[in-house]
Each structure stands twice: as structure tokens, then as C-alpha cells.
Image (cartoon, rainbow, N blue to C red; front, side):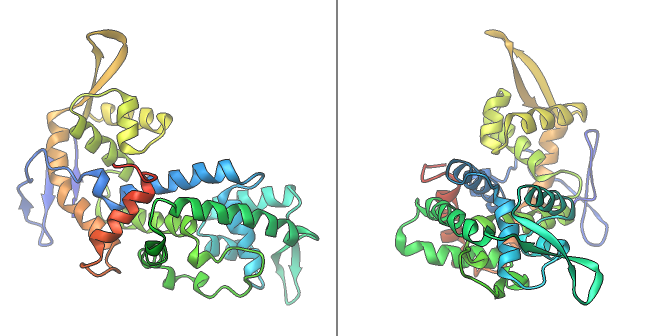
Amino acid sequence: MVESVTAGAIEVRDRRGDALRPPAPDSVVPPATAPGHLLRRAQQVHTELWGARVDGLTGPQYATLVAIAGWDDVDQRRAGQLASLDKSTVADVVRRLVTKGWVRRVRHPDDGRRRLLTLTGGSLERLAEVTEAARSVQDAILAPLRPSDRQEFVERLGRVARIEEADVAEQQHEAGVLLMRAAPGYLIRRAQQVHTTLWTATVPDVTGPQYAVLAAVAQLGTADQSRIGDAASLDSSSTADIVTRLGNQGWLIKETAANDRRRALVRLTVPARAALGALAGPVEAVQSDLLAPLGPEVRPEFISHLQQVAFAGRRP
């Protein structure tokens, strides 16, 4: 486990607290083969497909409606658990769904302090229409895979997402909505959350997106923020913010391009290269822990299928 990583000094200790010598400075876990990175990229593909095919509802809003329609006695807290949304996000989602006329809050018959969420009149019929578009998104995200591989990929993705540990494994009502346990978009988001939890516990000093930027710059050598963002699977705003933060920490240097003074190039500092070497082991451990529910013999095939989904059938 990495106990401290700073711009001025890298200190890595084993379980006994003894200092370890950092590995080779240029050690980098390639993003194109790291399942955590691939999940984030696959989530972006799903979001793009959803925005193009589903009108009026976001993916989290639809997942919340499925939770309300698919289970009995659902309050806001329960809806967030079923939809895999944090407390703040589900509060905002429910507020918007109430405003849009999809959902109403009603008093629990046996507990006046609880407010249950129910669909408004006609919402179930409207939800069935949206479900057809949502189903086309799920089909589209699996389209790069051979038809014979799709069901097995979804089953393995569910195991990576720890779906059996969630209540969604036993959906009570299935009419007119997607089955959460079989919806790849939902499973990708849940698996990404599992990765984030594992990452935070194992690599506390550097976030996943920060590592993705460092790894991208290490592989590219010197590059502008646009290329870095593409390689790290981050939008331009997130990339700019991370580059600025890592620059302030002394891990990245910005230079003006010799042939275009309007273009800034980014490269790693010496401490950043040493940090990447020290982080290689913990980052690989996170990827291994993420895939722990899968047998070692099927992991390469799962990663290959996840690459196809994440890169929409293009070679990474």
C-alpha cells in the first residue's frame, strides 16, 4: 500500500512498515488494458448512446424510476441504493422527477415519518415507452461483441459489479422496465463504483483520473491537453483541472510549443516518473481485486470484450 506520495519524496512501505525501493521509474499500467480505465470509457460510450437515443430522462433518472416501479415500498434512500446513486445525487434526481410529474411522495401507512415514492398516473405507460429506447441503448453498447459472446460478457460484468451483493438481484416487478441485473449500462456504472472504492482504499494519495493523466503523459512523452484527455478518457474540463492540480504539485510541467505559441505542451517531472514507478504495484493490485470474482482463466477474454465495448469496436 502507498502510504505517502509527494512531489519532493516518494515513500512506499510494506505491510510491516519497512521502506521499499520504488520500482522502475517509467513503470505504467497501460490504460488500454486496465479494466478500471476501460469501465470509465465504457460508461462514456453508454452516456453518449443514451443522450442520442433517449429523450427527456437521464440514465440515473431512468434507473431511479426502475427502482420505484420494480420494488415495493421504495423511499428516497432505498431508491438510491437500488439505482446505485449516492445520497446527494438521488436527492437531486428525485426532485427533478417530482418536478417533471413522473413521481410523487406519499406518506407511509405505518410510519408517518417516511415518504414513499410512487409513480404518478400514466407514468408506468410512459416508462414502458422510454424502456424501448433504453433497451436499444443496451443493445447498442453490446453491438461490438459477437452475439454469441454478449450474454456471457453481461454475466461476467455483473460479477465484477458485485451484483449478487445488491438487492437488484431480486427485482420484484419486471413489467415495462429493464432488468437492472441484466442491463450492461447499469452494471458498468456499478462496476466503476466498485473500482473507485477499491482505488481509494489502495491508492489514497492519487485519484484514478489523476493517475490516468500521468499514465497518458508517460506514454505520449510530451503532448497537449487534448491528446492527454483522449488517452485518459477524460473531458476537456476535467483534463484541464487535473493538469493544473498536478502542475501545482510539481508533477507536470507546461511548456509553450516551439511551432505554435498558443499551444501548451505537458510533460512529466522527475518526481512524477518516480511516483509512477512507486504506484505501479498498487494500481495493478486494484485491477486484480476488481476482477477477483472472475477466474484467472477468463479474465483476458473479459478484458478483451470490455475493450471492444469501451472503444466501440475500434482498436484501442
